[in-house]
Image (cartoon, rainbow, N blue to C red; front, top):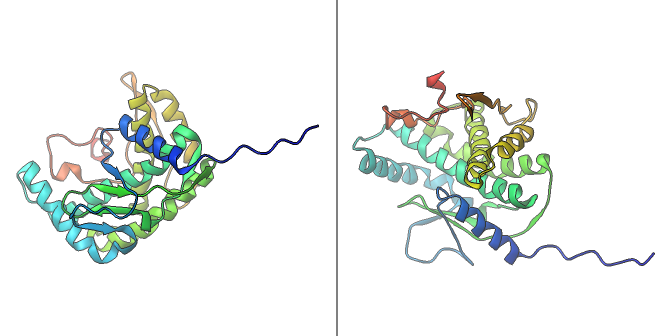
Length: 241
């Protein structure tokens, strides 16, 4: 039998195209792809130096909430809202590529930035490789674990509650992408298989259920959106239960 060379691994250019596809399908994903550090004069904070900047980031998030909703949030509310934004975005940057390509992109902290003024993200794509659910879970946990630790003093919650937030945002990102692609059933099945009950430090399982003809679940944590817009709590808010 003729031994044929293995096909070459997909290049970074292919990963960039996949990220562009992901962002095109997900209008809520506010990320800018960059070749190096963002250089437009913004107050870009590299995530590998996030911890000393969390206080400033939370203050700016509080100002954005005040401008948008006409009320000044308490500091731990602003911190929770910003943490939710970070977890949802960073998780989807990994899980979304995996959902589309079944490859797990590396997301080291020195390749991601957040603009303190706007909350927008900058991303310099790197390597990616094939991976299953366990590889994806580990990749997301490795990225968000230090972020949870940096935010913990500001959100005033314990580790389990923080991992509950991370679990919710990992699941909701895949669910959202599936809805945007018109394949919600597949996304729900994928998310449910991703987080079985014993996948630590995640606080799963996903616990999707059918209700009124559609899919829903109850969040295990709380992003505190109800505290800034009481009339419109999240559809999956535990306060609705």
